[in-house]
Image (cartoon, rainbow, N blue to C red; front, side, top):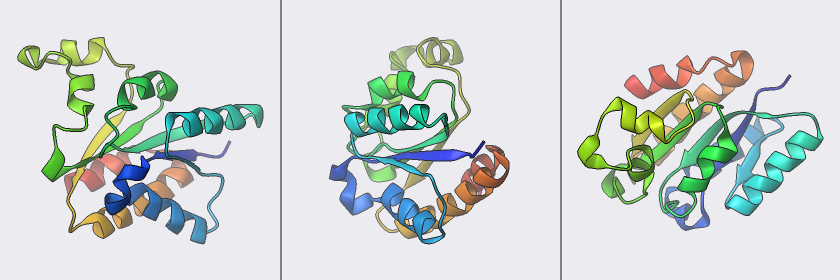
Length: 161
């Protein structure tokens, strides 16, 4: 079965459109199918279409910039599939991602984080306005490798460098 990546990026993130860049580059390389949603409605439609075609997503990549409103609903839609969260460094703390991952920051511990989330492989990448092209390039390379072998480790290693 094909390893289908699904990218999620709200239109308000256009000045930091990493997912859009990666999807364009994957399309240029004739990689398909690819999911690209800019809203929960689109994501649900993509997931429905994949299911009808007897496919399922292999990984989710979410640009959390200005996506605060959709993050709480994404957990259930993503199931146990791996996820890469892209956080804009200058705006860290404003996306709601950490609030979702750690509902009570005063109880910042592993159990409180896991209690409210579906267990899945997760990598959180930070980016800034000046390195979106570099991050998109790294994300493209990792996605291409992941499509070939479905090893999430590519994302973990690239995030450490």
